[in-house]
Image (tube, rainbow, N blue to C red; front, side, top):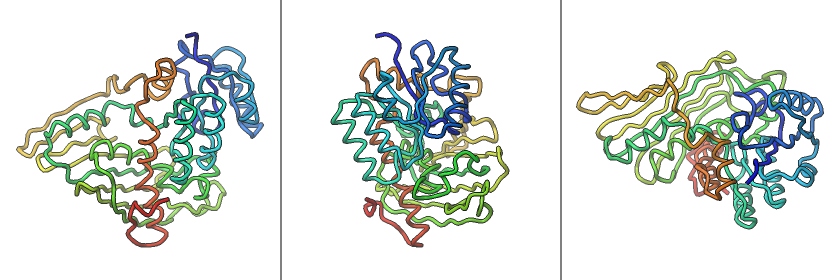
Length: 347
């Protein structure tokens, strides 16, 4: 197979300003054939930036349907606003194009189901952009949990204290378009907690509100800027996530971990994300990936390209992407309705 022809939908923060240009590290395997954005200013900026990175002309489209029809793509990275993921994804799959869709999968479970059905109907790949799932640390902890070394999982957690969403994501402040702050952000964290606990969530209670970002970047905000979320798992384990977007822009402190009956494992930003395995007998083991080797299967885009070539399933399947939304969606509902929400209520 020749180089894989790929495109990108959306020239916003994720693709132009958040950690480098998409597919840059895959240039030996791909041709970036086309990009798309319905805003001419962002499309022009993206075209200039990506052509400079890749070193050749790249076709630019304002309509993703036209790009799907004309660009002869094998695969596409979809990074439009969350509430358009279903439409952009289904159109690509039905055009015979494999899809890597940015997280969160969608803003309703029904739309997620439509995306999954379209992938099954067309026989094309649907991969989800959960980049934390492609890092070694959470899988090292998964291996420790599965070995039984921490005993039975009791509690899993994540805390994250950071600055607000970036100025470019103007749609994020409307929960109808983003799904809300917890859906937009914490789906990453629940994907990792699911990886460790390996039991379906059942009930969720969350409390949150707005303390600082009523009009961030001049936009009226209807999403929370801080929240605590507690959930039960079918196994009896508990999950807890705390998130606050009230620090200054660029500031970031996060920790994830799991406590079992015989020990706990965790890592966080404050010491370079060294994995700490604390046994109940006082013995501590450390696993340090700060010198590299923290990427699995070529990373998010590398895995996508490989799966296009081989037909293998991606590390993050659409079902996993959907499941990562169960607690966040229930949490958004719990905050609004001020009550415990059963995951079975979600539609």
